[in-house]
Image (cartoon, rainbow, N blue to C red):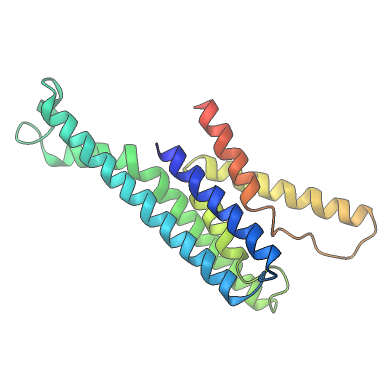
Length: 186
């Protein structure tokens, strides 16, 4: 179920990105605010759904004869909470931390280099793309983005261009591809 929520968020993000391009709003404050909102909503939705899964697990264990001995009063609440934490929360907490790190890093680098590297909304697009992929897929995504950047820059240099390789449309699509691959591999 979490897969479909993540897929929906990515599809909405791609649709918003395409819409902003056709309306010539790329790099504008509105675009930045829209992707900030998408990042915030995705964090709220993912962790709300994790909480919902925790609640459903508790209710299921409460009604099932063998598993009712795994929750209070037969067992400490710590067991249930740690089980829920490691099954529902940890993957997205790790990807959330990584996305916050890269969001702050991209904003810092962009500001230091006078907004030469990224459009205003790109750090937030990258944040959504990283967050939406749970651990360990977020690391695979980062490796894929790094390789795309190297290949794209090499192709531009090979053609003799001095332009920088634009990542604007290469944040969300690899995330979508990795999310789909993760669904079929796990």
